[in-house]
Amino acid sequence: MKKTTIVYFLLLTFFAATSLTNCTKGFIPEDDIIPTPPTNQGDTVTYQTHISAVISNSCINCHGGSNPQGNLLLETYTQVRNAVENGTLIQRINDAADPMPTSGLLPAQTRALFDEWVQNGYLEN
Ligand code: HEC
Image 1 (tube, rainbow, N blue to C red):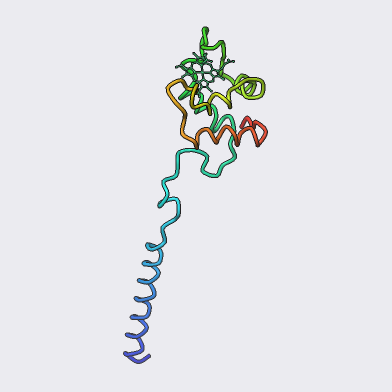
Image 2: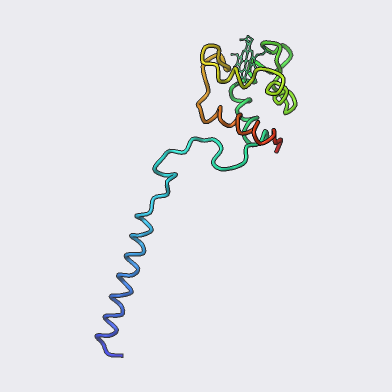
C-alpha cells in the first residue's frame, strides 16, 4: 500500500469513529428528556410490584393494625382488592374533595397504577 493510501485510510477510520461517537452522544433517549415518574415504566402492574408499595407508603399508617381508620384494613392483597371491588378505594383516591390519603391526592401517575391494575384483572405478582 502507498503511504498516502494508508494516511487516507487512517483518516477515514478516524472520521468514521468520530461521527459514530457523535451519533451516540447526539441520541438522547426520550426517557432522559421527559422525567419518567417512578411508577409503571412499562411493566405490567401487579399488587406485589406496584400497588403494595403505594399502600405501604400512603395508606397503611391509618389502614393497618388493630384499629384501622374507617374500619378498613389494607394490609393484604385480598383486603385491597376487596376495597376496590366492593368498596370505594378507587373513588376515594380520586376524590379531590375527600381524598385518600387525607393529606391530598396522590400523583396522577400513581393513581393511574390502580386503574391499570383493575383493568389487568388484579394481578397479584
Ligand atoms: C391519615 C390517615 C389516613 C390515611 C393515610 C389514609 N386514610 Fe383512608 N381513611 C381514613 C379515615 C379517617 C377514614 C374514615 C373517614 C372517611 O371515610 O373519610 C378513611 C376511609 C377510607 C376509605 C372508605 C372506607 C369506607 O368503607 O367507608 C377508603 C376506601 C380509604 N380510606 C382508602 C384509603 C387509601 C387507598 C389510602 C392510601 C392511598 C388511605 N385511605 C390513606 C384515614 C386515612
